[in-house]
Image (cartoon, rainbow, N blue to C red; front, side, top):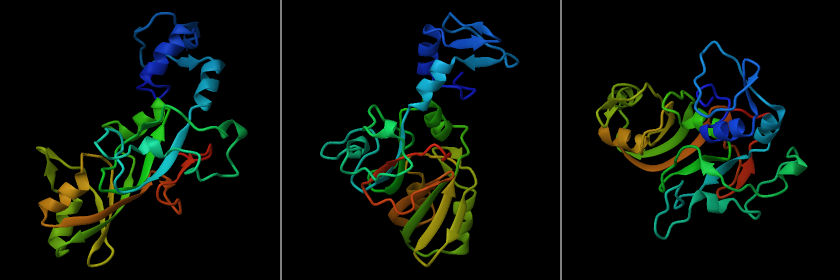
Length: 233
């Protein structure tokens, strides 16, 4: 069910235990049953209703805030999801009038970087964004120190490896003598900083401005908003 994007693994167990899962029209009552590719899996309307209530938020993470793993003296991104930091929208339904709990970051943004970070209660969205097979684009504005030659730009676009594994092709556009726009479809640890280091460049600032079709736009630093029903990655 998780592989098909129907729900998360945790939700699958819960939905089966509640009798909310049907395989080819027959209620599934046993955890861990195997389902063939040709079989149809359907959720009960109560499970669908449950999923619609799951919250996903967009945060403009400031520098000095960690995405998930706590570090001594540094706040975690989830701690910024407060009423005071909420950038409200008129399109949000009344059911979103309270603060979401139990949010987990879907991806990471290191402590020295800023910009768009997704936190969600929805395992489907988390899998969509952080699965090794995901090809959703992540766009960054990057300032660097060092000479931006054609050779270096070419290597950043394709041909580098990290930890013994070749990187996917990246989109790299030179905006000025010190700024790049980089678009990736993967998320290795500190990937852009390490890529730049490999070609003799030092990253001085890094900001993520887009994930898929969701853009940071004018969301102020440290503020967050709900992902709206008509928005998709």
